[in-house]
Structures are given as C-alpha cells and as structure tokens.
Length: 108
Image (cartoon, rainbow, N blue to C red):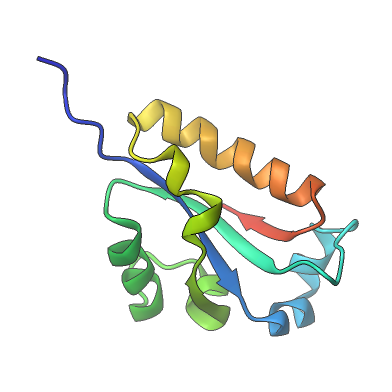
C-alpha cells in the first residue's frame, strides 16, 4: 500500500509594505505593481496550520510573520497533496512561474 501523500505547496499573500524591504525588492527586479506580493512555501502540515505557525513565530519566515495576510488557495490547491520530493520541486517551480508572471515572490 502506498504511503499517503501529505505534503503541500502554499502561497501567502503579503502586504505591499514588504516592498519597503530592500532584500525583497532586490530579488524581484521585474515586479509588476499591479500584481500581489507573495510567499511560496511547502509543508507536511495543512497549509492553514502552517500559516498559523508562521504568524505565531514558529519556524516562521520573517516576511510571512510580519506581512502575511492570508493564504491564496486559488494559486496552489490544484497541486496538493503530493509526495515530499514533488512538493519540494513544485515550491521552486511555482515561485519561478509567479515571479515570471510579475508577482513579487519570496521563496526560502
């Protein structure tokens, strides 16, 4: 019997205030101001639970903790759940695709 796939990619909407962070801006030279800023991550948890941990400071990305507003399931739900290796790869691919589409993206 195959193991149940339980890893997820997820996308968090970040406040536009993240654009005051020089490191974020430097990583997004082709950012389109008409598009949102987002964080792309992967987790073995439910994305809602992972977002709550970010906001509570538990293994948190500082941009999500400070600027995270809500999840954007319309950008990731179609991929989940998946095996760990696929989630790790999809995290990078999704971040690249969103950045190429003009989103401001942080992916750690």
